[in-house]
Image (cartoon, rainbow, N blue to C red; front, side, top):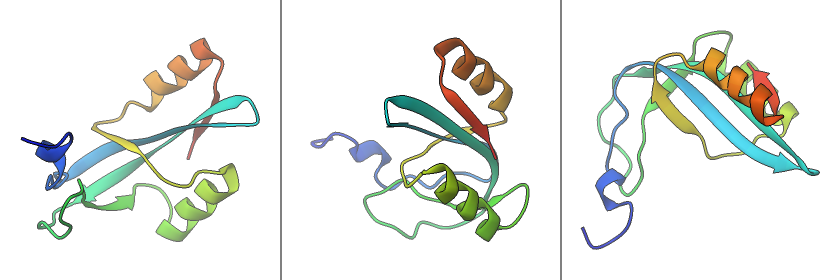
Length: 102
């Protein structure tokens, strides 16, 4: 591939339970925000980006976005197959990060 990231540009995230993670800094503190989502079956629909369709495992989509906005999360998430929330909470504690599990 000629461009960095090209192998992932048309990747469709497969169905199943995923851990969705955001890490960012605000006012000198780092925060780690994670939640569990279900990736839904879908076909390719966005060129040049990894993509998929998701729904939260708990609550509604509106509730999830309300909580993300309240915490101060905007965009950019890491997504991995399975539930790694306990491991992420332990890591946040070791690193002294603020941890939010929503």
